[in-house]
Amino acid sequence: MHCIRSIKHEQEESFYRLFIVSFLVFITVLSTLIITHHLLLGNNYTYQYPLIGFLILLLIYPFHKLFHYIIMPDKREIYLQIQRHFVVVPFIEVKLDKAVPKRRYLFALITPFLTMSLLWLLIYYYYDLKSVYMYLALAIHLAICTTDIYCFFTYLKFPNNSFIEDSSRGVRVLIKDEFDDEWS
Image 1 (spheres, rainbow, N blue to C red):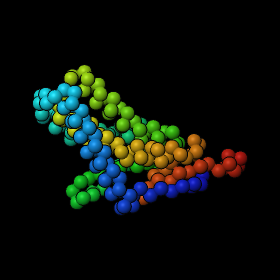
Image 2: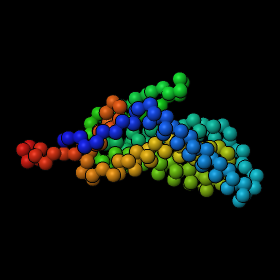
Image 3: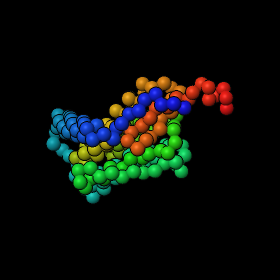
Image 4: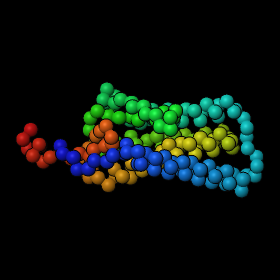
């Protein structure tokens, strides 16, 4: 296999740029949800279960990473890398030691977005919780998913037969050489 593209997501300016975009998504989603709530339903929030709402807010990030982990094929090849940014904030990365087919990698990237958004919609409509915690949960979830969605659309442009491999500073996109198949 040979590398056709190397993407360095770990550069400082790239991290801060994506963090700012995620923060803007958080502010936009939260503002839109609250304004829409006020326009459609008035000022009638439910303030039930504040402890459960706070617990949900704390568990969004670990569950997001757990969904990435569950989808990956070989669990022995996966490791977690924890980095600290902004002095005290831990960021967890799910990394792979081997190359994964592009479709599998893309599916692992988009799974937390799809499953947690669907779960949020089911809880929101089934339990009729018009709570600030629910709006915060969706805004935080979409802010966390911003980086995944950005990477998803970046990797979508590569050939379908490519493989994606995590490196120390980013990812490498690999393609099988034709002569490897002939001589092996």
